[in-house]
Image (cartoon, rainbow, N blue to C red; front, side, top):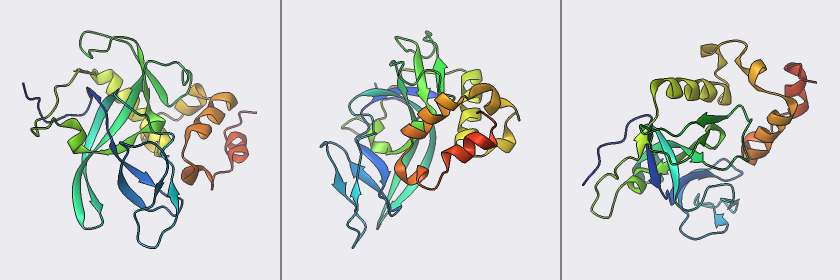
Length: 204
């Protein structure tokens, strides 16, 4: 049975092999991750290597967030912005790892973490079968979960004006901030002075 067009907050079990990645020159393209290892940047005359080692491989639960269009050279692709979910507790305690308890509504077998700091863009076709039909969703999160995830996304992308002023101070420590920093891609962190951020937040 074919599924419906994905909506924000729906959960899917998919293997998104085609994903948007950046090289160190900030060139952005969709790459096929069916084969492991490093890849050359698709931009003409760019010799940078794209490292996909931090991308989750294989079939995982993903939280659908929004639909977009991606212009990759001459090709215009429909893409989805998704947030990976994990049963592993490695990221537990991070302010960008939102806990989701398993319920009959969301269809998760175990309590999970929504890894907001690993939000990514994938080819929409990864959510379709070989006949071009949408996959059936596993379930969906409730309104409260969506609002909490939205709040974390606002802080992750430095859009804190739309969130409560004391949220970050109440949800972060030096240890968890350093953890988040380690998970971010290098192109995002190379211009960030972590010690200054910690000092500005008065976390020492």
